[in-house]
Image (cartoon, rainbow over all chains, first blue to last red):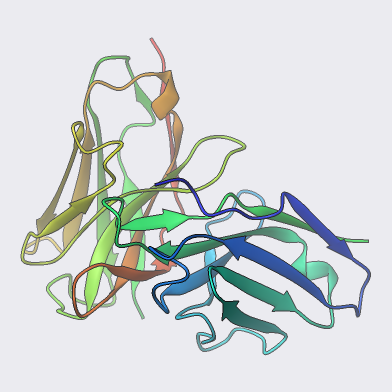
Length: 111
Length: 124
């Protein structure tokens, strides 16, 4: 089971919206609603931003939203702010022998 | 509010066994609501799930590491541990422990919260 595929980088200006894609297969992203997204600032532990495709944990800004279509999940950040500059990883439960898989990671740059 | 803290040696020699412990505070490791997991991140690279354990001792391991990994739980100390044998330089990474959400039919749903992470370097 390979890692889920994400774009290496995405950028946007303050106030804009950006979307990060996460492509898997019918054994993971497409087959189950157990996609989550993590934000990681340099030298910090990852932070859960979205779980079960669309749900935000308590305390996470509503500028972050998740969705899914077929084998591709997406994270949208609206009203982009400087503090959003970080690495973002998707992940999913998988029915393959791997059980759990992370995405390749996307570096978000605020221009 | 759950908090997790990794502990263990920061330097391990090649071919030896890496051993880390995660101490859980703010809640019981015997909770049926969670799995407990280990994830690692080589310097400058992405996240890799290592494995997860339920309080009962049931485990799930990444097949790519399964032959070298053992995860165990000590409910009396509210801790769970990771052992990775026969390490090489490729095992150099920041190792995180984390709380994992449970899927009713078995499996990990998400990781939250995470420990701060601990860098383990494999070198002679």
